[in-house]
Image 1 (cartoon, one colour):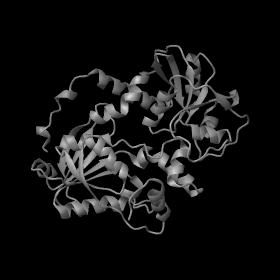
Image 2: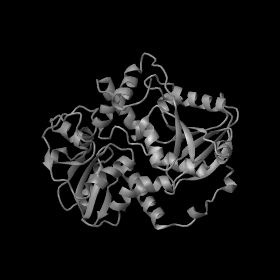
Image 3: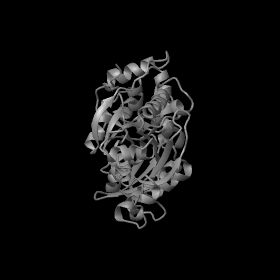
Image 4: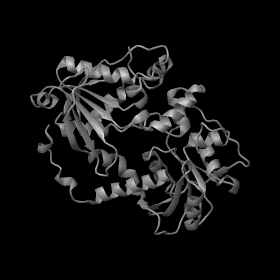
Length: 379
């Protein structure tokens, strides 16, 4: 798929959807820097700041436009842990909880302590439950989009010209909008150790966020155009497993094994998705590892941080396949959710190719959790 044949003209001029995505991206960047952000909706205006990045100067800026004392927005499971009220493992992942904070807790170090389950809770005063602000769900989603801990201080606010403002509706629409705005921006032949004839195509969303990659083996586009179904794999990036050879997971063997199978088959498309740690990001994955070392499994560790068990968006993979001209595939996976998600997004999955690898003595528990709690087909 030479880039000259792709239509990039629709990205040249701003559209309302593209401007909305840019606003969300700017708001995320501000939160990651520790700067407060305003979230606007029909219910009014909410000022928020990320608990893990906010500093003293930012807290003063927050207070300057807040119309009430702040509350702390958390995922319900994390809020229950802060309040020392354990919840059952079957408790829902979705939703928002709010805690009323004594003044002694509204300082950077203690906010980070409340947000991060890897930090021991040593609180001079105990927070209490509070009503959730109307825009709380959009605010928490904004933190997740930024791969931050889903923990924010929030308060109703007045307008502040110095702060970035984002519409709550644009935050809610961001994940599918970013996925469907993907377009190829670079392509090159990159011979690989096991795949001498490989190409890599980089895809970028209209907000200018991080790129996703398609590693193409042979000519899967031509094969698909002739009615074939090339091998495909939706592989979420794993810095520790793919690059460092971590023994905690099976990502590295799955990546290299998929490329070898595609080379043997003659054609294939490996979609390398920027969705580290099942969509929670590398930093949060390291936090989850620390919690696993304390006894939690991979699913419960993600939930303890405040994320869902799997936060990935496979519409990204489907859109990349569509743009590559590959409408049908044989999917290399052991994950039934990938089969269902790609099919729901309009990709014809004509079959599943078994793609599992034996444990190494370190990741045996991880693999057992994938089979027992995620339903992966490892046999």
